[in-house]
Length: 303
Length: 320
Image (cartoon, rainbow over the protein chains, first blue to last red):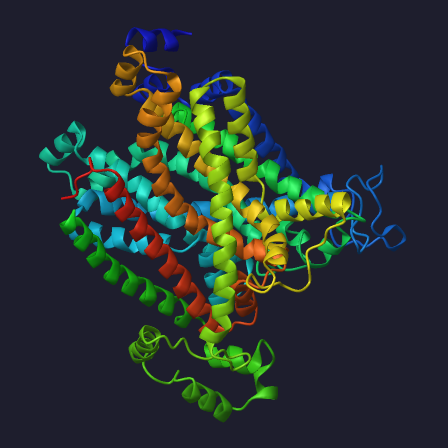
């Protein structure tokens, strides 16, 4: 327990001490688990969903397409944990397989969106000037469209295969990645070690890659974790509108659409469980992301 | 102030132009082309249409001209209020949009109102009672609300209304001017869903903004003078704290319009979002293009108004 002591002697919070000393991944994890119960709960929720997604074939008692004609719209029981839908398909198995789509689409769209956004943000923030001004105006325009509308335009133009949906959702995340990484790049480029690197004649590219990029890791992780939930919600919205992932692939949003709504009062479990799955996953990411932000960027605490 | 106003207005024009180019390009630089979509809709090419058919459709739609010429034609018509003709039923796009804009605008306004009614008092209470039970509850509930997909909240609300009041979303829509009561009854529930969900972010923003204002020196001075807490809160804190909330309300409109698209679908409301989904489903590009441009326009105007209001409300801010 030397860390908090040093931190308090210097009048710093644990998080500040942490970013200053750049502790190992293990210690960061330990600090996270010890000081952030809600964040840990969020992490657990995400982990459970990830386990469901990875081991779907083992965990799900039925195939997601298997129709049990003798048990159509059966209420939850020991065979069908979450009941069955209007085609007699096991809702539990479909929710388990649905985790795959949500996490795959979420992960890749967040990686693509924040990744490309970060690269643009790094260059835009480092070089400033005219390029930066133009890029920032473009980002403004990009952000003047609501996420779902932008994603729908992409889907209308490209079609709704899974890679296209990842592209569409990634596109909604991209401008935020640019904003966040750009602003931390701007503050880093004035720092002493960047000046020093420039003085010994390092090239711009080397400064960006070796000195600035590693130090934008914290905001990068924060934006990634906070965008993950948004991405999952956008995917669910697209699929719900019938313009996202198409049948028979089970997607949580898709399970709530169309005919399912007719069974609102007679078979509510068809609607309740997929919606619950979306909410729990998004909430898990929100808790985990907030805790991560508190630790990596203590100034933002309590916002 | 006047220079700021002029500069801000001057910025609006290139932004609007940029957005229109952006939207146009996105819908025109696509694999395959309009004519294919229109003639075949996914069917096998050779069976349905010949090469001449494709050429004819392309020239009818003006798709054989170079891209920049197509843009100029479209933008020129757009400026004059001609939004083109729907490919699906050959109606003028504007004619199809107008009645729906009124519906969506009403729904949107009701939602913003509901969001503010929940978020502003909620945020103030959470801030004044910081780190107490009520603060935690409010923040926790707002986080949960933000995590639930809005269409799911809508569906659950319908289940609730159905079981308790035997209420189902009406099949036909009642006009505000002909049947105001029915109209209100139809729109109030979707507005509640959209509004409640938007209130989550607004609540947290109000809270942190009030917290910041509470730590200001002038609040300490007011306390030292022995003013009543309520007077400090309403006169000193809120007037300063609610400024950023105004800005957020502007951004909230962006978010709200996305949410509305889905909710109109859930509650079967013949709004703009409903038309948009139909258009995307049938790849009716003139309609998609017009609606997206309209939404972007509303967002840009909303941002402009918020910026100007901000400058007008807060004389401390000097824009140079």
